[in-house]
Image (tube, rainbow, N blue to C red):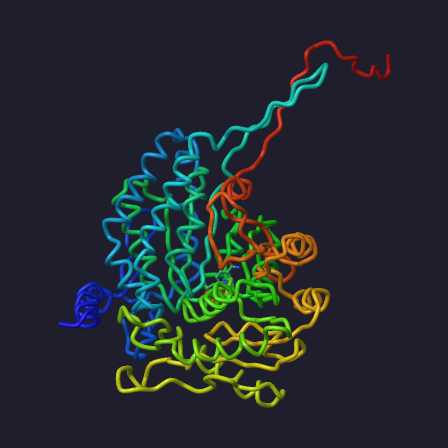
Length: 508
Ligand code: NAD
């Protein structure tokens, strides 16, 4: 049996229960009933067949989940950090135990190639272990001395938080948010994306098995306009950790304003990769291809704008065209597949609309530009050819808008100043990548480039203590290490007088 067939067989065994029973909500440690509720079909990107029914939650479901999170909060906040650490490490162990299932279900549900999903559970477990280690120290603040007063700061969990995640890499992004929230002592209500909700169920199951107390972890399925909206307006929720589109972030800011919610928004990007004449050619080429065509280009940190210097442009584009033409599109469970199907037919249409846009605006479609078909993939799946637009300028829609597919837009430049101006000429500011052997240039770019993150001579490399997040329309706030605790915790200052200072004496 081929590895693809073996994976398909295993995946269908894991997916069977999702097909057989509606995936409901997880509230106060219980799965809600599927009787008499509204639901919708969860469609597979592979062939648009239903993977099963998903409960479509409403305001009443959200209310129950938020009240459960509120009731469970004081006890979880006051659970000693060492105990939270133990539970979160147990959670990580269980993730690893179910890593095969997580990889196959995630791949089938969101169309990401199995080669990129294989390590998902292990990386998710690493997130949990990293924050578990920090739980015992999470409340520690600072001691700040003055001659006549001593200030000490304490940190305390902010309260129940909403975690709202997108469909592109739902499992990984959920662990990024939920691990620090729980380590800090917050309780959560998770709303997974309606297009890829399956691994959120597995996560909730593991929370129970790991001994996370009832009500600490709640999950409500459904649509953004209903479940998401109610959640972001609910008075019990103190903060919203959101990952998704910029426009949704704007809605969430408005929805949360009346109850003054704290917000962490990780939004879209149109990230540039700057390749200078003095770049390490082969490494730059590898990274450029990897950072837009891996994860089907459905990646917030994808380098979707290639800015290439005129001296190497011709050679670089020739090599790039060959590599893009060689990319292996296929079934996501095939270990050979590099690019899988896009999440949904509507998203596929959106991506395809940029092919027309590129033509209308006068760019060249150097590779791709059409739907992908062959006898190895279903004609009903959401497959798109890896695409390269060349000869673009930065005012074109293909250079300004987030396409979120395997589509790269190339723009040439002559000087460092031009490269910087083009890189910054975008409403987004999530990340940038620069390839150059000139260290002084790297430092000049580091100071002037308008992004939350810059990788120099590297593809995206995640270091858990380092801050992750964007500026401009790419978001507000940072994930990672202590930056996460800043978000999930309140800082309280206690000022103690030494009894020696003079108090103003009014009316004496
Ligand atoms: P989306 O904004 O459509 O949906 C994200 C989540 O928000 C979903 O769960 C959705 O149901 C919910 N939602 C929608 N409307 C809502 C509302 N009014 N109130 C509350 N919740 C609502 O995003 P998507 O299409 O699922 O994901 C793709 C986007 O996510 C891209 O723009 C991508 O760049 C971004 N993203 C950013 C990062 C980052 O770290 N910056 C990471 C991954 C994805």
